[in-house]
Image (cartoon, rainbow, N blue to C red; front, side, top):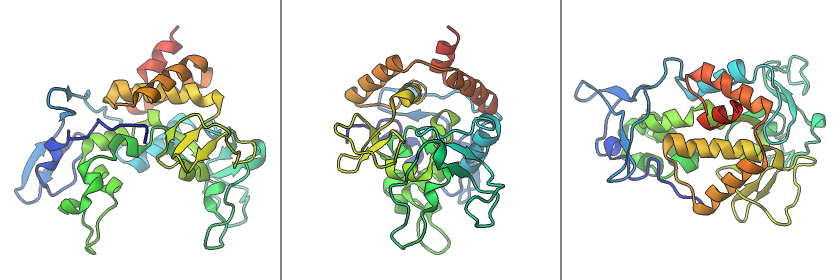
Length: 303
């Protein structure tokens, strides 16, 4: 892999040295059900010498990932129904029942508007692939890059609060989300969320962005390539700057560490694909929706 993890790596002593019962709230506080003790975990350390103290959580910040997605739909993208990578038109509610499934409250992509052709129109079970026609909220910087090295992600069976009533455990990602408030905060940051074709969201997975030589177009006219051998994805040139400014924000705001080559590529993408009107408008809406936004974008938009 061509990326490294530092935010939340080894830094979770503040969270993992104690096995608590009870989910933390948005401020990093909770009541330990065993000791009936209410306490908080707001500050984290990403190394022995470096500490990260995030600003107070705004009152209107997302309270869950579901709430974050709702905010993104209703407060940011409500009149900009275009997918991030492929520029496909879509609707949040398929009132025309395009796929004749009687569900008029699902998202629906207009594949003809962008020339999107699915890589896998049919699933391995022989059913139509629902992800080719719906949008999903993509983490531009994958959640795995942010928190995949958390002990809660890798060893969820060590955390009693991640055990379900049936004895099974949450996924590593869900366990980290439930028990590490800082990860939950980064995970739900609207700056890092964008609507994407569901199939692309699945295929991109947690792959890092890169330049793929001699790429094969697997999605029709959509300029997005995935190399499943190298676990990399290449976006279209017209969104590379948008991606770069999100990555640079994640480094600046949360202390995420990137491999030198990735960092250099993001700096180059930032220069080669300048800020545009929608990116500025999106950033203003995000600030209103969650209390803060991408300061890198804000500065560029003010020039």
